[in-house]
Image (cartoon, rainbow, N blue to C red; front, side, top):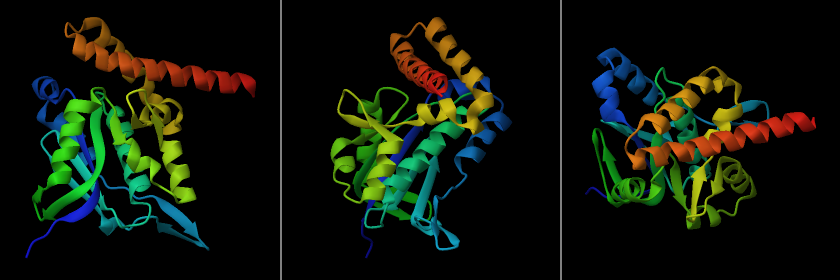
Length: 233
């Protein structure tokens, strides 16, 4: 008998993918998905050993067309903070492509069924609908109650470092903060800023402009924050 399993479930869309298909070669598109399929883990130091916070076999990935799902059973310790970091890592890696790719998505807790190449369930549907109807901008949203119910001190510290609460009541992953200061993204910042400016200045669709105005606001905010910190030192 096949049954659902309860997960923390992330659904992420690659924005502008139709345009990418129109203007990119097959090889260039394949490079994006080669990056999207890479798997990562967070390690912790226990004694003299470095071990995964969540075992790699407990982290599930599913890639379909222009969407990527990552999900971890909700009864695994630190599942939500680890999933949040994996999504942040994915967002930053997509920005570091030859042509920046922005991501919109959501994380929920719910039930899903996975077997070989089959994935379905209420969690997937809810995560998709939240990404499509509520995320609005290139961001990954998390319902407030999921973040606020965390009681473990370490997990709460991770979530506070990875997210911030926005005015519409969603916690949002701080990927633009990470992208703005981490050394691994340095060589890509100018290209991303130029791409965002291009989308704002040249698009005739206000909804598209709004998405990139959101990105521009946070890029400017974090840049000024870093400059102020450097000036104080």
